[in-house]
Length: 204
View: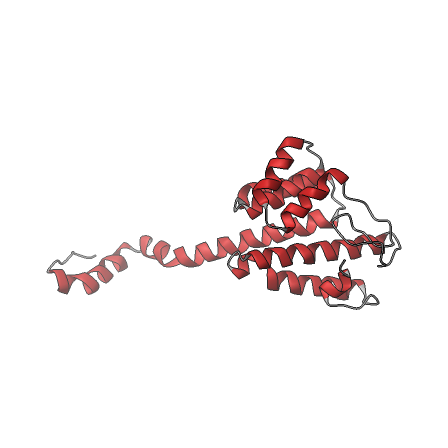
């Protein structure tokens, strides 16, 4: 049993803005894409997402954290929306990093609810299929627009995609620049290879 406020490193008396700022700081720090896909970072990210979601749900329902239990069903004394019981085992499997097993159990259910799509996205992400994970995350968030857990995960996935595109653009920037400048490419070829291999290429 973990106090969600302790997970985010804030006091229960912290303002909503302070809670949100703490969540964003930790999400940025432990985002899997920033940690080389580390399983520990993924596990920590799940804890951060769950903690933030629980706090938001408790405050929305006028509750406060207590010893009613904390887990995938947003425990605590505030009665927030509960995770469907059939998904509890899937969430446990995801926390243990058993993504393929979680995927199999979800496929057997074929429930196609918002939570089903969300958990499917988590399983796909854990298996390295970020494209499918993003699509399923969008489906879940679209079916329940007010669900902060789904929205937070979708944001996380979107941030990861943006970082990947930025890295790809950075890595391919020189290549694209050279392709658009054949004369410069020719000149560089002569400088690098002309003297060594006895070959000269006529440049413009």
